[in-house]
Length: 425
Image 1 (cartoon, helix red, strand yellow):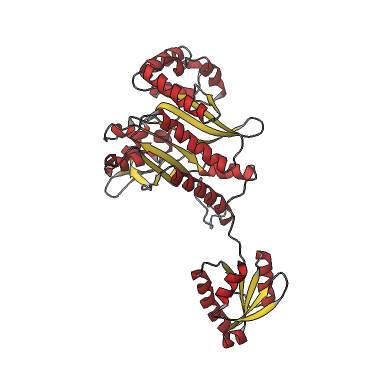
Image 2 (cartoon, helix red, strand yellow; image 1 turned 180 degrees about the horizontal axis):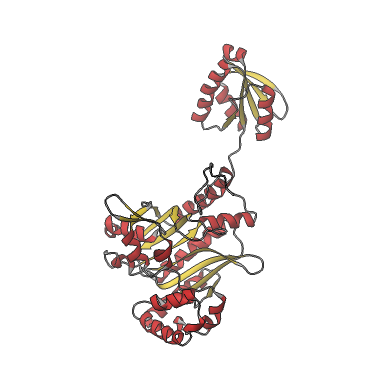
């Protein structure tokens, strides 16, 4: 039983400790570099938004809105929610800040935490980090392919293995209503055989039945009519073009007619990216698609859009499983050792001089033993140790010790930065 006198992290939340920060930093660096290359500007939206924004944007019948949101009431009786995903908030920002007047297409990217109240399990948390890319103001199918390409490139650059793209089209308001009727008719006679969740989905949003992972629903799902056979001419043409673009850039994809994604705002193209582990187990890394009606739905102008998001914790977990290193720590080439209070004072000044000159220096100001400090310098792999004792501090000099040869020489404290920089070259 947990010790009641000790505070612990809230269920489903987790600390990102220093040893894990290198993975997050590597992911951030790769994502930001790719975003810069493709011309995306970074956006940060508030963690808290009006509850109605998510209810209207994501869909009242979705599991996210019905079961997973962190909702709160303010003292002024406003209904607010912690963001469960980024897209609705970014669309709100696009409308509120008049971004339609900027040159289109407008490309935005983000990186930050989201919150969902769901059962914590391996790789899934109630506070989790996402990064994503959104493109507004362009209806061309090439945009769908470019978003997929961006995520594929990110995962390739992170050296994740065995990447798979699954893709589908969910049609639009012209062809989807007919398909939903067709699917409802098919499921009606089989309603008694599907799981309780699917019985609810059948009444609220029948497409979500196709997203079910329960074993008992799989045979029914497999025999269901497929939306790709019932797309209108425009959706069929758009999807065909997306696949042709993917073929042209030689990205490996498979058609998944049961892929519908869990949010209501998608139109036409939807996709997910996986990394397949040994034994055929698929690790979901990212997902997204086109959402041409969302800006108008949230009271903006009619604006086509496309985007996707990836879960950072899952990527970190996979990097560890595949023995992929995180961001490398900068090398420590200089160690500053000191003995005595006057040497500490001079050492603090000298450390700042090195910082201004952009030379990385390690130190152990809390230790007084020279032997302990030299051991530390050795462990860090420092090339040179600068030794400051009381005598050196009084004389205005520093002992420079070559850690490989053990050779030492004395230099003036005012010249040591320039001398060390020269030796490091």
